[in-house]
Length: 238
Image 1 (cartoon, rainbow, N blue to C red):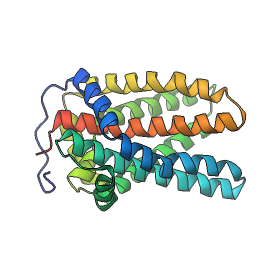
Image 2 (cartoon, rainbow, N blue to C red):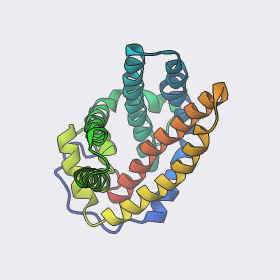
Image 3 (cartoon, one colour):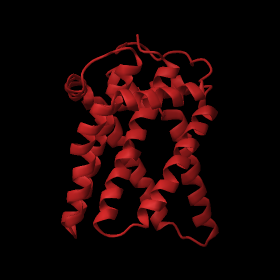
């Protein structure tokens, strides 16, 4: 795990099917980490956060987002460790993940802040006008481009112990030449999540809350595992 290594040359052709296979195997192999950390950091905060309103609800959402970033860092480390041949019990992987999580959480929070800015601009866009349409197109294009360029940024930050900006430069170097394939992976992930999210949104009451919490767990798990599988596909961990 080359924490001080310089940015590498662009990787070879990314195997899209191999990435999907690695992601699936990583979920199965790390189910203990996923279940334990997911229950504590995603499911319970989602259920408990339903009881707040007003300013308290805003604080609850902020706390849930921070816990989700920690979950992504922990599961991302566990998945990357497994895919690189590291075998350990879930508790050991969680302890290691907590020790290594800081750069990944920092990077995730920075990316989250940029996403919030983009969503805010989208809300204030003058919809129905040419300028509003152009702003929406610009935001969507920028988001997809960033996703393709920076897909493995959180595993890079955690495994190689890089700060947010250094991790972004490294991720951009790794994804060069493979961004169309990464876009295809992102579209597959989106097609997996969108129908599930629509179905969950149609269920009301307590059952709906439970399904929403499980959907959030599935979505955040995908956010953690897929970039780890891409990272291994682009730059196997030594």
